[in-house]
Image 1 (cartoon, helix red, strand yellow):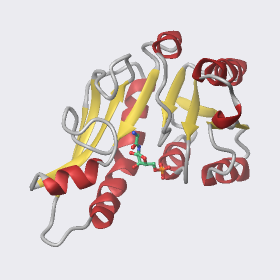
Image 2 (cartoon, helix red, strand yellow):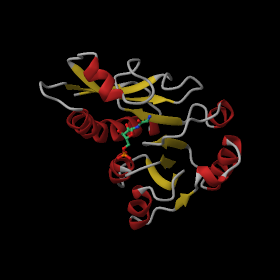
Image 3 (cartoon, protein in one colour):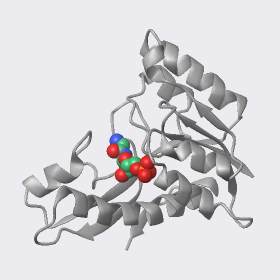
Length: 195
Ligand code: GAR
């Protein structure tokens, strides 16, 4: 049985999708939900499901390294085999990434390699793209550029705003991330392609 730690910064809808998918037939189970923001809505949702949580406030640490050292302590205390970034909005240092190399995944709301970084939906709309989507990838030292483990596509519709497009993509994120984690936890890195 693989142990999964999930890092969040916000509402945690992707975290919930992962947790809900980890039923008795799943090769993994959640052992920790940690956030860099104590007010992240996902923390209460995880606690309500009896998953151990850790709330850190990155603003109270003198350096990025000091924050990450504390975060790593919480993670290592839970002995996870896999770390899932699920709406975790802090850039990680190469040292932190190296520590979890090969077992840290991230979901990003664009069809990578298009639009790494922020404001992905606004950028897709500004470019006049006809399709958008999301990507799950392995986390490497290059931001949003690690090996792709899955992608899901949605159409961009006439009249779309950043909000309507984000909502359409998010629905697919909730299908894609659990599908990738199931495969990854079973030792299979073949990319999941949806729909
Ligand atoms: C998701 O759309 C996720 O792809 C995005 O933040 C949202 C978190 O929502 N992540 C990034 O932009 C990472 N750079 P959630 O908290 O409801 O899962």
